Picture 1: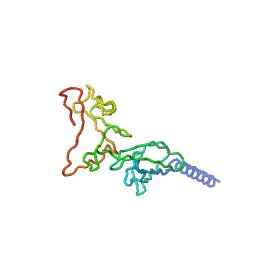
Picture 2 (picture 1 turned 120 degrees about the vertical axis):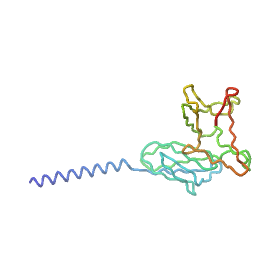
Picture 3 (picture 1 turned 45 degrees about the vertical axis):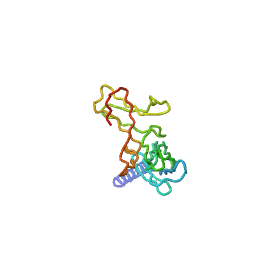
Picture 4 (picture 1 turned 180 degrees about the vertical axis):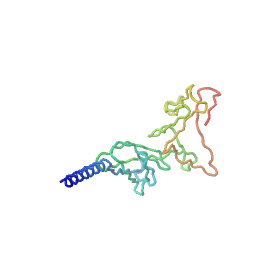
Length: 203
């Protein structure tokens, strides 16, 4: 009788463990998010766009689609592609697969020959990200000389380090679109406004 009782206890324990395993698996279920990336003007799919969600990265295929598996929750989807401005959008993953449409606008240029390409103008639909260091920070404000324009303001309090500053990025991992340098196009121009005459500005 003792052997039978011990055997029944062991079987009940195994059943309980199996039930716990089943519950854990249900909690960890992933759902597929399909992101559809297109050209804002033409509506054509964009191949090779980088899609990032919660540290996971995928590249769109020829149909402009990228799939990433995510568990239940709310996420931010960030998208970037060469020749286009970056974009991001929130998405909520519930109890089923989801899809998200994101349209990218082309990066601006001064003429069709590409003699000058604008990398950042602070008027992007998705604002650039500023990463301060040494106690400094940055924010987008109205241009002090043109109210219709926006600029980045560097905020450097008295407690900041002398080398404090801000990095500007529009892409994933603190990046910007590739600068189209050539043998004859070798310069980068940055417009800087100083609040005081003679104040040194380090770039």
